[in-house]
Amino acid sequence: MTNTQKMQSAVGAGVLLIGLALAAGALSIPAAAGYGGVGPNFLPWVVAVSLIACGVLIVREALTGGFRAMDPPSGAERAYWPAFAWVSAALLANAALITTLGFILSCTLCYMLAVQGLRRAGGQAAGRPVGLAIDAATGAAIAAPVYWTFTKFLGINLPGLTQSGWL
Image (cartoon, rainbow, N blue to C red):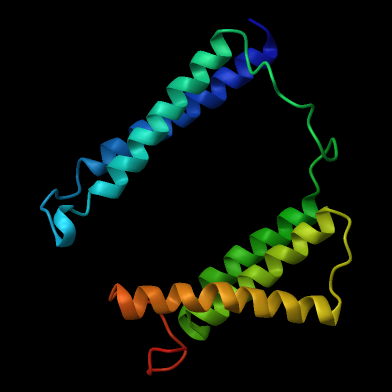
């Protein structure tokens, strides 16, 4: 077995273990059927079974010769750490500010920061006012419908900026 096959097998084993851990956690979720005939443990079981199946298939593929039709890796040979810092800052800012700014604004900020990191990693122009405005509009266009879907249609409370429930 080559080193590449060992690494591919390790990835498959990791996916399999995550699926098994999720299945173990799903055992503790009550199975009482709710709205639509499914209980709160339905989605965790779907994800767990999917991960277990993917892990088994990845390990099988690695043990029977490895990923044969893989393209050579693209991108730089080393990680671009500033992009990692931008995306990490985006996630941490979202977690820290979601109860203060509300879901829509904190997710918009998260999107803007993450896109800045990804643009910089790709060698694209970043930090320009027009680009930031487009990123803000795109982030809000993604976050607002998600917020409204959860709060208005599904009845799940997400932190808002106002008490009206629309922002």
